Length: 133
Figure 1 (spheres, rainbow, N blue to C red):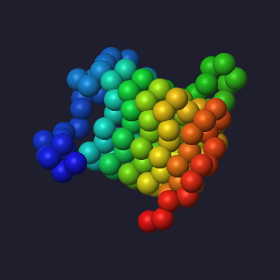
Figure 2: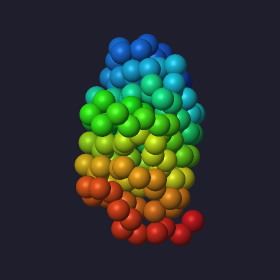
Figure 3: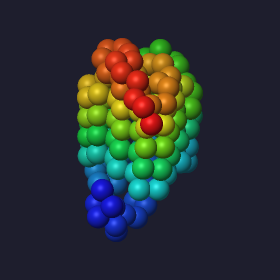
Figure 4: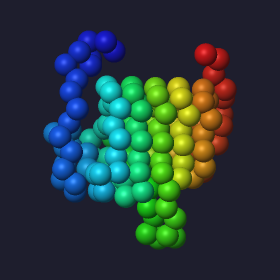
């Protein structure tokens, strides 16, 4: 992993336009992007009500993070804590925090907080295993 991020730099983020890595942010003023993050192509981040992505977070391709849901008018800050990993095609809803070192399996729907050091997956995402750290 060290070599993978040896030349990592913060991407230029322009509201509503794909980054060099082909992910998009709306409400970019509300995004806080940590150091050496890895966000997969074709992911979408709505940061209207704040999205905090801490250091060393991995987010798979085709993920959606919503701080605002226009379907049910929910809104709230989303936080992805240090070193968490989110599998591809996951959806994270407003007001959710994903805990430090936690892993969210691919295609999961996260609509409530996930504690530190757990593995979750499913629709809705539920804890499958606690990890020792």
